[in-house]
Length: 110
Image (cartoon, rainbow, N blue to C red; front, top):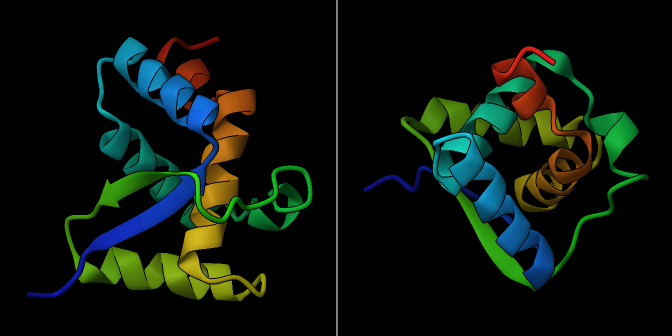
């Protein structure tokens, strides 16, 4: 079976906050992660995020369970444009969302 997951590592405290954030949006952490990955592919903000929200190696995993391999490959290709593999790119992206809260603002129109 083809692996259709992207993992991003965050600090323990961030993982707990990410889970609470997802629950407050009536989603699970994987759904939030998926939305963030899809948005990033179209928005292309990663270059400005990686310096402010550096990737964490180790720590706790946030796993995006993707619907298809094409999305995984698309994010991996996107991350490569910034000199990153998918895992550290996802780490920076997930850490940034805990501060910027784009999805919450979008859902609640704030």
